[in-house]
Image (cartoon, rainbow, N blue to C red; front, side, top):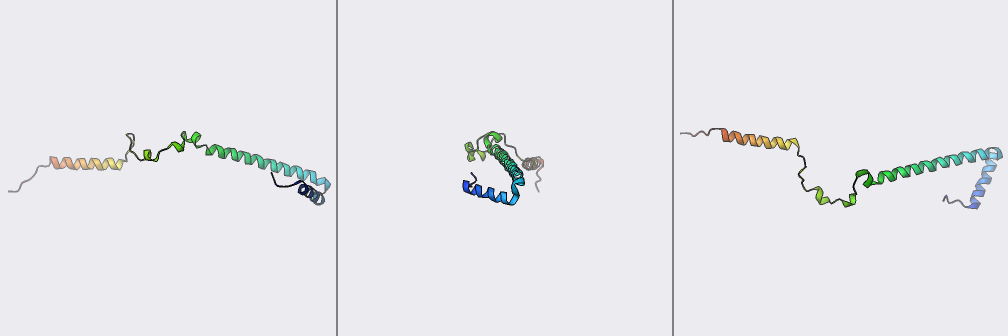
Length: 108
């Protein structure tokens, strides 16, 4: 998994024994093992969290592969319109009503 063979590991142990000495080597090895264990635990936790975030169907409630883009652009009955469009329509209707109600003047 780490790419270190048996002879390379033995060489690292001998170098560590020469540098650290027999008293400190076990304590340092235990500390390094603890760090590696914490790093693996954090990696597993991050992987699990990413897998949960990526699960789109569970998070969104539908499968995006089943979406049809053409359906997104067809108007539906429950579509809402902005108030600006409603105001423009009522202004046009008010102007049309005023024209109908105003008496027409004929010049003689």
